[in-house]
Amino acid sequence: MLELIKEYITSPYLVEGIKKSEGKNGVSESSLILRLFPGSPSILLNFQKIKIEREVINRERDLTPYKQFVRESAGILNRYELEFDSDKIPFRITDHDKMWKEWLKLSEILSSKYTGAEVERELGYMTSVLDDEQKLFPIVAGDYPIRELYGRELYKIKFGKDNKYSRDWYETAFSEKLLFSQTCRLIEAKREDKIQMAGFADLKRNENRIKRICRRTGINIGHITSIEQKTVYSGSNMARIPDRIETEFSVRAEGGLLKRETIVLTIKKA
Image (cartoon, rainbow, N blue to C red):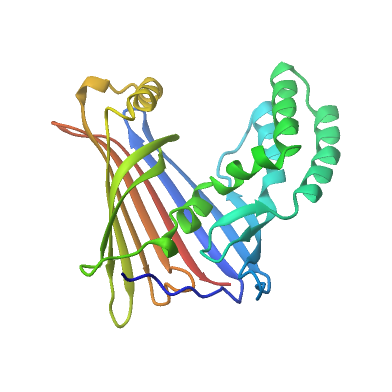
């Protein structure tokens, strides 16, 4: 069995992310930047804390008051610290108390600045989430750049003699958690190593979630022949962090592509 060597990141990194969706309702694209600031690892437990700063690249102008409120309230999730175990899997938010105190101050400002039933509902929801680390953690860890970087447990994969590994694995695609039959392949080279992942969703086992995707997108579920995933991790020092991650999810029919979602992360030292 072959596993990836694990090394801590020891200097800040800049992660540029682009997410694009194409389908019946047109094309949409969003982008953001993450800055990773690693702390010194715990020698005893092999854990590491990483401070994360998140910046959404907003291109939309002339926002409605409610959209401006949503943007301002979501800003509370743009600075936090995660703790990672020895397999580079995040398992807790270390500065939850600080985030909660900051939210109490921000929510007071927002409630005096914006009014309406929608605002009250959103403030109530945000308060209930930020008050409970168990609710907040999956939201933070499920953010697509964190999910792409750390959510697939790369460093726990045990590749066989053919450098392949197969598993059933949940992926978040089209805003739903779908179960994929996934094959992972390690390609080693002098300049750059790669991990390729190819997955096919079980249409029957994911039926209810696929129905929700279809309701949101206008796709006829009877036309779907497959839902597929392709992911490629590449880098010159994969033991530490990849240089690039590319993921594509696609909904296909006999006549071709019905919907596609692509995510690209570019990672470099800050």
